[in-house]
Amino acid sequence: MRLTRFTDVALRVLMRLAVAEGVDPPTTREVADTMRVPYTHAAKVVARLQHLNLLDARRGRGGGLTLTAAGHSASIGALVRELEGTDDVVECEGDTPCPLRSDCRLRGALRRAQEAFYASLDPITVTDLVASPTGPLLLGIGSGPPPD
Image (cartoon, rainbow, N blue to C red; front, top):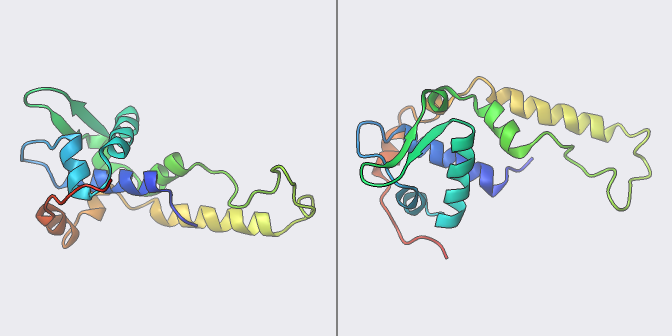
């Protein structure tokens, strides 16, 4: 299973905000630059995470992004399920349906593997992800030129 770029960026944004406590809250642009992702992509991620009540975004002077209490304790498994969805790993019913779809064992095996993947992430929280040595490393990441 491979995570979408959106989910990857969302997890990295949450991790970055988790270590930004006690300093001026970073803006979406600053987070995008630090994580080396396009601003427009970061802005979409921030909007979705705000909608999920995992972060607060404030505009203007004194504004920026802050992680909510729910963001700190969010289950990574639940978040990945939310962002990735729980669709089947393989497409069995699309434009050209699989001839095995009625008696296939592969779809069930892949569904169980997908759930095992999510279940292994369920007990992990955002706070867990930024424990040392990751947290200090995140604080040390400097801005570089953002990708085109």
